[in-house]
Length: 298
Image 1 (cartoon, helix red, strand yellow):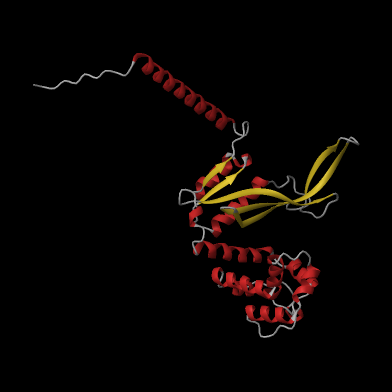
Image 2 (cartoon, rainbow, N blue to C red):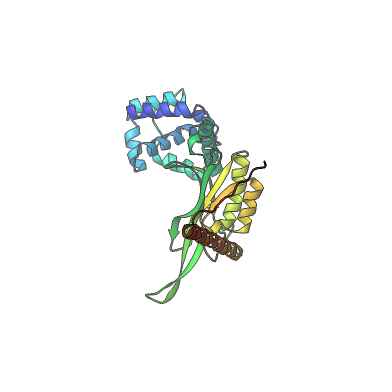
């Protein structure tokens, strides 16, 4: 692991020079008098776990708490004292209390650092626009209500002919696409504000909130949004227009009647143009090339 850690630190220092300082600026939600490990130590430990593909928190604790590993982490983080790395219970407690916005600050720093390094310039669309794909995904499903923010969906069980309810947690993600890699730049949970919410939150509402975040965070970034047919609607077009974003959305017949009508009209015109061109070519082939008569003044 030590060789892998050395390579990891080389990459970190090349691309993200202020990474450890950014971790140290995280607002720690715990009571200060009970803190043994700073936020940077806990977050760096869990980051190493994921980077090295360790499956469980228990395995992480067993593999990391070795003298040489502890010394290396201590040196990388610039700590005066570190006798052992945090136990997984300590990490879980910290992550449970931590405000997600604090982690968003770290992500934003890393994305901006990569853009500043001009690492992905060749992946711009038309040498200008960054491709950002937006899509919602389910992260948890429950048979019983999990919390007041749960989304709910009713469905009919065909076997027992009864209507059942499932509870869900969904999130909308915006990802920067660079070749075969994607980097998350913004996340917005799709969830009800409270148990008594009259209408369920939805992906389009979450997109409106996310769009404000993206514009606020990346004010001058030239963006081209990529999305499915759900986003082919006037409110989204207006947001893109106001933010000066380009967009590529999947067309699905029946989504917007005016667009469908315009699409069919353009398609009809194109087919007629192709037909007319074909007929003109046929006339030329039947009657030969046109004859040109050139005269000159004496």
